[in-house]
Length: 400
Image 1 (cartoon, one colour):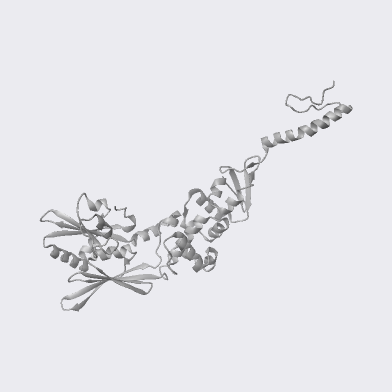
Image 2 (image 1 turned 90 degrees about the horizontal axis):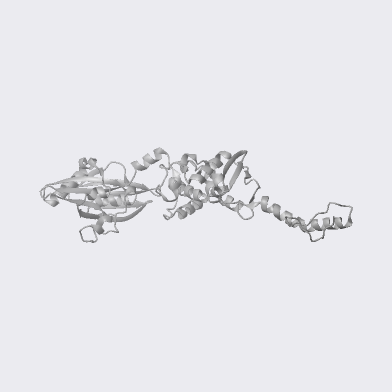
């Protein structure tokens, strides 16, 4: 039975004649193939053709023979290497799961993949192989944190600005980048602070114990700074702690003249301090490091003075409370000067509200602080009880 060349089947494709001995059949078959092939090809592509890889598509990374299953977004959001590799013309296979082979250390990659998934990494999980692979993969956030922690742990070289990027740039300038620092044998100081060779700043607090005149000398990296006169022992203490100094060694007294003595106390800080927060907050530190931080943490002190006769109480507080204190701001009480003090009338559990909850009873038995307390009592000319409290400087809330 003959059919016209324009005749179509139910699917809309040209009819292919079965009688290949007929010339008209051959012509119709050729026409069918010419006109139908593009349509069939397009139909096949729409069903099984390759598609661009999506952010949540699964992907297998074969690293040195060990396979890791993850999703594209985990890799591309953390690594410039994978962001470049899996962008543009990268297409997944028909089964929706692709493999990439890396001839690298699978143990190091496993640690980095855990970091890319969680956003945090244990300090002890970071070794030289992890850092070298992180450089290759361009895991920039981790590399920034490593340089900041490493530079501050070494504690030598120019003091960079407080911005993480400036500290990382100083690390690259002084140590030549991560790979060179490893080749120089500096990796142990990424793990732990170099407390022996680190450059240190010193401060000396001198207290004339008869009239409580307080003078502070800061010696930054061997250079003597300006002399700071303080009107109060705890103003000096809070200022030193605010500037990163903590006490070391035993204080000693010396006699200046008849009935005039002075106490000398010593403080120091690392020239490049150990940073907490910012870029380095991605690290989970070892337990002993947290203990060390707490032991050496800077503090703020408040003196609680109770007037037993009038049943009132006053507080000598750090400088940042001056703005809220019932007092005039002058040269000796300047909110911008960390060595100033605020005198505040106690109300509504002021100490508790501002986290001054740690009693510093040892100060009450210290000879120098005892003279300070006696000096305060004479100045008030009333019978009073004096208590001293502190709070960790790092946990101080926004006291506005």
